[in-house]
Length: 299
Picture 1: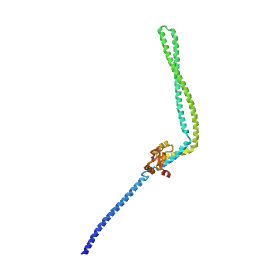
Picture 2: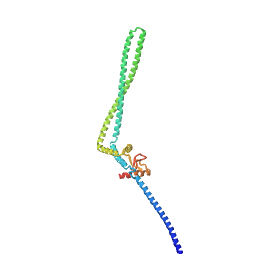
Picture 3: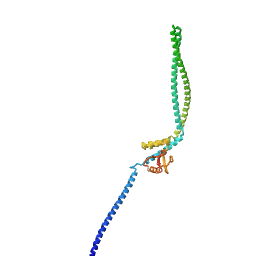
């Protein structure tokens, strides 16, 4: 009987052990499933991150930035050529502007002179006509038949004299203004002649320099136009606007967290973003287009 009970007890224990083992196995399976699920989840997150970095989903601006770098090199060379020409281009523009203003002034003065001369001639003709009438009235005074008729002729003569005197006063004013215009026009014509002579000389010098740099400048401009044609219109507008302010220095390199253009510091997070080249960033201080040093080195 004892042996039977022991066997029954073993059987009971074996059944319990089996249940416990099944539970443990299920637990292990659950843990394995969770671990596998976690691994799959981690793998999924990592893949999504990689996918987000893929250029097919977020196009990087590396090509645009490299284009900007090439444009800067060209614009720097073009700026150097302009420096070789010195102040001649700006001096020529200034002289041309003066010549234009003087020519306009001379034209206006000549028009004024013509109008005043016409007015003066008209007044002189009018006075000549009135003087003839006065002389005729004077002759009629000797043939009057009454005092009333004499008084009327006298009044007519006096009224004509008033107009003649008024016209003569106006003619004197016109003559004075004409003299001033003559003097001013003479001075302006002299100045204009000197400016035109100076302009011709400076244009001659500039033409000689242009011939000297013609081949080099033409090649640079052609290369520049090719690069510009590869950029989207908004990038062209952006670059040209900045280049207009800095003349060949539209871009700046980020070195040690600083802008190479203005030497102001750039926030660390922005430095990281600039390195990814996923967007175009400009310096908050000087407005230049920022490019990472690594990208420049790779280029």
